[in-house]
Length: 339
Image (cartoon, rainbow, N blue to C red):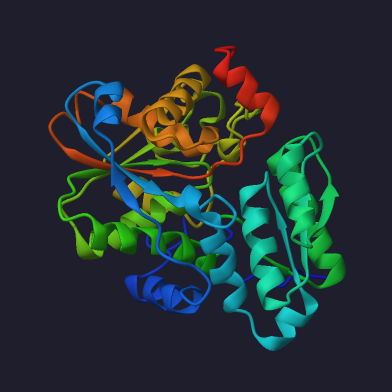
């Protein structure tokens, strides 16, 4: 039996380059506004100095959401778009944590049953958070991609709506709402640097900025140990990697995705990778200069600004701090300079 997928695209060659429109983003914001407040966009002079070069860095604090990550926007956008029958049946998704936390939070508010599939050995604190919010948690597979295959099977068997973390138009529209806020909050903006796992945040930036600030380039950054989207972008076609080897679990994917890759390929001004050591250093930098905690995926934008310092010199650059759900053992290793 087929899962109740919404808006998924199966093949990259036939996918629309722009999977969502500005109207989709505005509609998503109208749906999620009753449940979330806008997050701040802040400037820290000490952070400017820490990343080197002469860029002025603006930090979008998506870590201030109830689940400490922007993906609560995605979850609320997806679940508020369901009809009453779909809500009653429930939803299923694969996650390393933040997508599942966002869905679980939305499910609790909207009374929608949520099943999340995580890989074995997943962040135990993210697992505990999803369970505390009422999600049913299943552990399947050795990484995100294997968990995603298992989630697809669970959705088929239980007739649940599959809410993919990337290949879902309502998920992408939810992610893009943060960029509406950035445009409204930033009187001056010359560039943005966005972390990429599946690409929902980056595509959101491209769609919003293309419509409202077309002169602002979007740069992407990915972990070198999980560089499928980066490698695909440079190759001009979707490629997969055998392993996603990074402590930044929100970036640990092994392939580019049908719904986001065409837009990334068409719209990005550049795409770079950074090492786990550079990501860990950015976590320490954010903690020291902003006194905000970031997990690996939440700090990768800052690592990207440091890597692109020459190209971004003299510009005002926005990054997103999302999320803050780093587990205690990984944080200990980061603070002790063991990564």
